[in-house]
Length: 465
Image (cartoon, rainbow, N blue to C red; front, side):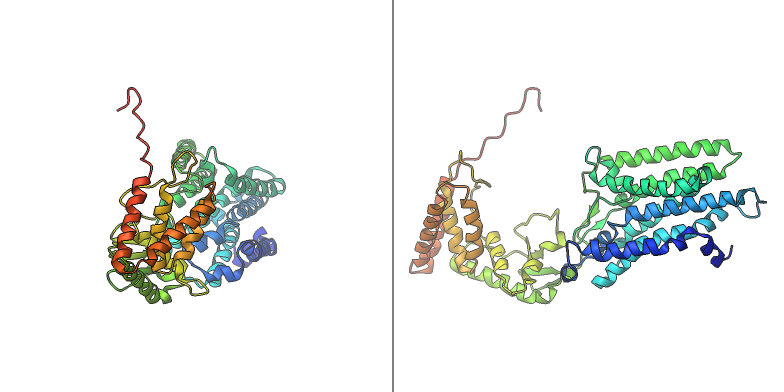
């Protein structure tokens, strides 16, 4: 069949204004409903993240439209008695040609928002960033095969719209499942998000593709395997086995937490001791030198004041591991470099504050939360010492703001804050640097002396190892 005749006879062409219009409307309305254009392009921008965001509204729509169009075209083949003609070409080839417009329609529903989003954000995708798109395009083909068979065995006038609506709602509603969780991960509508620096792992996109492709392959085997009973019987059994494996695999994932791989965002580094590395795509890498100067200066000022701090070998941008970040160690600190350097006002107080929190350490542990039944006598000495160090790097305001919020859990929080500021002022008023450093160490020792003892570990239960 010639291309012009194929397009003219296919439902994909004369319904194109509807589904293209819906795609354009949803892209410019829904995708910018929570984040206006200015915020979207402001960053930080990461291609896999933007591809995923662009596709979120369109997975179910693409599958549903493809299923409905393929059902209609499959019914048209039956109406025209194509299968009763002499077999000059294989059934596979006839079906592939007839379904091509439906498949292209589904692909365009997925491709259009991705292309528009990448143009909007001026991002160049890598092959790995396009895995969700490739998964969706593969699932579109599976729905086209099922739709063609459905149109062959049912009245297309009823089956086409009904199957499209049923598929849309069945897929869209999987996001509401929490027990069991596997429908969220096998529906073809990715429930997992990609943070900055992350790629979707192969299982995350392969499981939903196989879950859709397995029954489609079984349908194709049944439909074209006339006279081959073992083939027609074995294909559904194999499909059920593949789907069961997919369900078992997805059942081990949490809600919105399919497998991802992190640490893929490129970084630019400068200096040594510490070597400071910032995400290239975060939008603030031009301020890398300024950020390193601020970090180095803060470390020098703390050390000159008497704080026993060892500069780390590397200071890395926490944006590089936006979630599941490795903990900071003595040799590597994770600081919010991009977040602080990208502030519109250019104020790097937050960066100095982060250096402070990583620099001041105590030889003991303190409660992480304030509770009425646990002594809080240590707070004044602890916070006075840290506040004294915060003044040395001009980071007292964010520290006081944080502690004020914490003091709200104490009945006499206002009096505690006043006492902390008074003790820190006394330490700063000492005449020599040596006296101030000695006062700082004394406050730390007093805080540790007043700190409550850690709760004893629970005794092992009877019969436990």
